[in-house]
Every structure is written in structure tokens, then in C-alpha cells.
Length: 109
Image 1 (tube, rainbow, N blue to C red):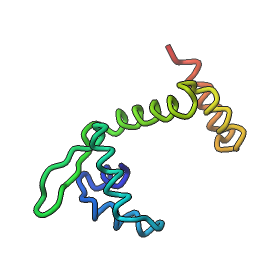
Image 2 (cartoon, rainbow, N blue to C red):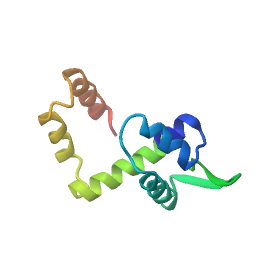
Image 3 (cartoon, one colour):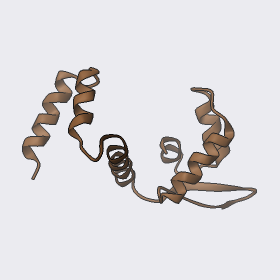
Image 4 (cartoon, one colour):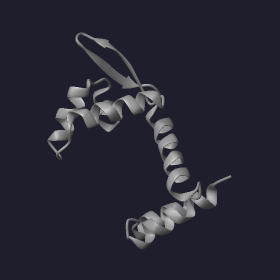
């Protein structure tokens, strides 16, 4: 999704080439993931010459919200607290992050 968001439209080959510069990945893996993202409604595709051109189907914020929700449901049974505890324990949240999170929690409806 990050590659498609940054390019606004991309083929499977575009995404594959971009990802390949950072890690080893199979072309078929990229194709499978993009098809899954399309099925879930995160991407839409149209014919662009000999290949499909993928574009974001919804705003980035909406897609991220849906992906996080799906992850929470699948991994943590829908509960956010165990995820936050894990992030704190693994030191993925700095003191500044924690302060900002506490501020947002206090302001939440």
C-alpha cells in the first residue's frame, strides 16, 4: 500500500521493483498481496496497457484504520490494550510517544 500511495498508481511490477530494492521478495507474492488488497477494497485496478494499474480505493487514513482493526481482531481478539502493552514492553514507544498517547486518551470522547 505504501508504494501505491506514494506513486498514486502502480503495476505489480512497479511495486515489486520498489520492494526488491529493500528486501528479497517474489513477484508472485507481490501479485498475491495486491489481489488480496483489491478483494478487501483497499485497491482498485484497471487495465493499463498489457497489465493492471492499481490505485488506492479509499483514503489512506480509512485504509489504515481498517487494517489496524483487522489486525487487532485477528491477533488480539479486538482488544487494543494488549497491543499497547506489547509495544511498551518491547520499547517501541518512547516517553514522548507515551505522553502524546496519554494526551489523546484524555481528549477522547
